[in-house]
Length: 265
Ligand code: KIV
Image (tube, rainbow, N blue to C red):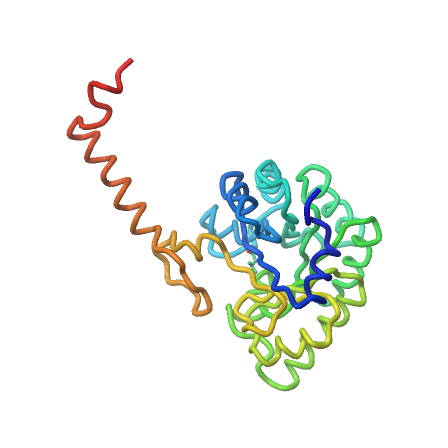
C-alpha cells in the first residue's frame, strides 16, 4: 500500500524529512504526481478558481469535490490523497460534517480531508476524526472566509494575531488533526507554529520553516497567464509552450499539413 498512511507524514517530521504536496483535480495530473513520488495530493477547492473559473472557492460544492476526488483517486496508487471540505460542508452541524467527510472517503476515494479553521470548527473536526477519517487542519489565510478577512492577505502579522493563529493550530492539533496547513503566514510565525506542534506543518506562502510545502500544480508549471502570487516559484512556462504548440496545430489544419495523406486510413 506504499506510503499513504497519515502516520508516515508524522514520522517524516520526526526524521526531519520535508513533505512534498501538490494539488490535482483530474486523473492525468494525479497519475503524473503519483509517479514522480509526491507524498500527498490535495484535491483542493482551489479547483473553483483553477478548473471552473470562479472568482473564489465559495461556490464549490460537495458534488464538485466528490467528482474531482473520484477522478484523482483513479490515478493514484501510492500518495496520500487529501480532499478539501468545501464551504458550508461542515459549518451548519456536526452531523453534516460527518456525512460530507464520509462522502469524500466513501464515494470520492480520498484517504483524508482538509478543513479550514472557522470559529468552533474543532467540534466538527473532532466528530469527523471520531468516525475514523483523518483530518488536515488549515489556518492562516483561509480562503473560504475571504469576505470576512477582507481579501487574500497575510495573516498573523501582529503579535496578537500571531498568538491567535498559534492558539487555533494548537486547538486543531488537540482535536486530532494529523497535519496542519499554514497559508500566507509570516515565516517566523510559521516556524514558531511548526516548533510548537508535534504534527507536521505544510506551508504555502509561509516560508522555509514548515515541515513541508504545497503549491497549486498549475502555478508550478506556469500554465496560466494570470499574475501568480508572490510566493509561487514557476518551474516552467507551459502557458507559452501550450500556446505555441496548439497554435501550430491550428495552422497545420488550416494549411492541410495535418492530417496529411499519410494519416488517412
Ligand atoms: O485549495 C487549495 O488548493 C488549497 C491550497 C492551500 C493549496 O487549499
